Image (tube, rainbow, N blue to C red; front, side, top):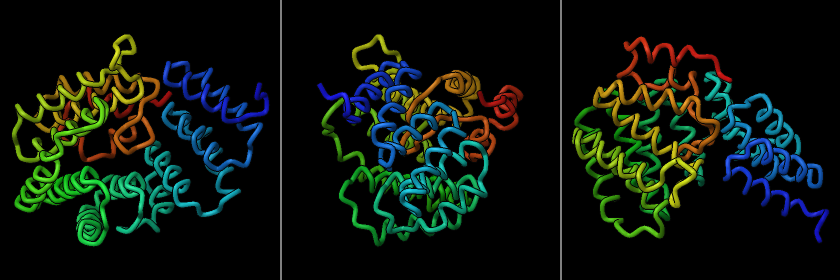
Length: 304
């Protein structure tokens, strides 16, 4: 009835993506683009899918098309930067993110900036930026505020400020633990994931691991379970691997990362690309695994 509607094709593409029919999803979205080729939102959505599929050249091409239509669009620049991060091109990503500061309205945009500083191991700037955001930015969500406090605690710990990291983690715990009521099991799972990270920062090993495991159980990645989500589930599994790495549970963490590198597509918390060997090489979060030969092989593995 609506042969000229790009919205119908976008909806079909999203459904196919949710069902793990990647090629079908891309085909629908590309057909939608032929009907609405100057839609920056649509170009970004298709590029996002390519990025999560680790098809980075295709993603970058679409981001460039979007920037030809809306030069210097901050959302496009930032998501394009995340592709460079996933490829290990930290310098180019940093160039695109130079204008992002503590007042950037979108939490995902700011999170990519903090990820950049972490990949650069510029912890002092990450701490400065997070402190400024917490002091100046008006949060409409306590979840977002708690995540910023958690990010500050991580940055402080990486910078060697153990005492400061503990204080920030306790503040994040106070913010997030009061948010018991969540609208659905997906929100609850990501809320629990945030708590698991706080517990790891406060050195509560058993509680951190059990909490991360609970988040995975709430939204499993297997599509044959009612609560499963093939896009969100693996991101929770990556969080569990991070918690395990923090406490030197190397074999469990590396086993999970091996599987995640073979997972075709998934959304990570506030990040639009799947895990890659380059990110494993660069991200200090994985430093506890550096000396393990199996982990070293994962870092050297060629991206598909």
